[in-house]
Length: 516
Image 1 (cartoon, rainbow, N blue to C red):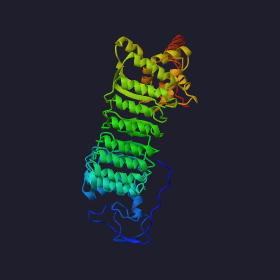
Image 2: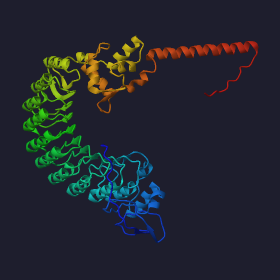
Image 3: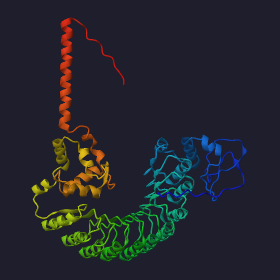
């Protein structure tokens, strides 16, 4: 999230009379009983009125969150959600699949107007429709604490897209991550999102996957990418973007300087779209992660992408799984990386491609120049299962054996790989350091297994603290012997004391507990 200062709202000068109670279902005031007519000065708000405001400033501080929500449920006529009540003071709220509907969503929105603890809000699959999303957007006009919002699978359609577009154009909330997957957004909705996101600089992560954008949608989203100056992560997977939309999207991507992660999997780019991607990679120096899984890209398309990889200096991850590639296309991709001395490629996923031992030899040469690179393929033709097992010997056992011999901890070994001895390290740097060190003989496959353990959440950083249980003692064997020896010594001392006491006829003194 950026560091922009909050925008100040316009204030109203006049004082308003606040009624003690509201009987209309159209108004969402939830207040305790006050005298019939009390003159109150409203707090400073934005000039546009919403039906989610808490008008009585005294009640704002005296009504608890639970009571406010219960009153809201009573007002709109829904059953309260016990999970919401129990977790109101947590930073993460997961209300996915709770069947809230539009009225239940409105009750939640009322309670959240004054909530200051919830940062991440999940409301996926709740059939909230446009009424519910309207309530949420009104709430976000007042709540500056929520930063992440998931309203996927709510069938928002064109009306919901219009409401979201109006909100996003204002740039007034603290929201930086919004998930809108599976909301039946079609071509007309793409126009609205283009209008909203072309001028929005607060949203950093946008998920529009599992919708129905096609070629016109690709054109609109391409225009948006050319103008947007804030978006860093965009998910357009599982849409219907074909050749024309792909080319238009890539044209916009050429001018973009902020996007780092782009998921285009499960579309239909084809080889023409792959050519447009190749042209983007020649010019774009911000994109680090690109997913093109299942886009009907053949060896011809791989050749066009390869031309972009020869000069690209930013891309780290390229996924081409489930495309009709063969070893020929795979060779083109890795040799293009070899030709680029400034390549930052760390992962190439072609995991449906069956390769030969000749390919592995070529890859060894590429990795000698780019040790940070990992290429994921299906398997090697003709390689015996026994040899495969040897290649994948548990690397953790090899490391543990080494640290036992050296009488050091596993944590010491890992920290020695980091230039500054830090507890965390980028995946690419770790892979490079592991291949270049000579203390523990490991191959690319074993390093991949290590990374899976040390970066389980796929954050792009390996975390050595996961090895702390092995670091308390120089080795498990040593610690076990020490413990057994201590127990044995203690038992002998105790036994000698008992025997000595029995021989003299003295009673054993009682031990008292001491605290430090």
